[in-house]
Amino acid sequence: MNNAVTGTAFVSYQNPQQRDFVFNIPNSACGLFTAEHIDKDLLKQCNHLHIVGSSLFSFRMIDVMRKAITTIKSAGGTVSFDPNIRKEMLSIPEMAQALDYLIEYTDIFIPSESELPFFARHKNLSEEQIVSDLLHGGVNMWR
Picture: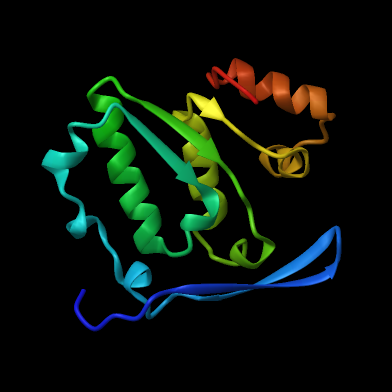
């Protein structure tokens, strides 16, 4: 990706509990990254993949994530997932679907308490019920 700029993210603190992000990513190197850029031979040597939700800022990166998961899981590897959900990214049409997809393949889930309700957004569940549902769905470890 010659001549592509570096992506940036800026944070603005409204108060200690509220912050807003501004992302400058779509035309950056990471915004232009596609599944075609993956070195599949190198990825096949890996036995674990860690995904941070805030890295799924475009349909291209979501596709990269899906293909990387397929490669890692087909070789018997594991996937860890830290949602790191940013409200600014939830407007990306594929984001909710990508996060749900990730839960299906996650072995180690590392959410914050504030992120748990997102994973039960279509249900009226307590935090304990959300955790129970996720654990019964195949998530193996929590922090």
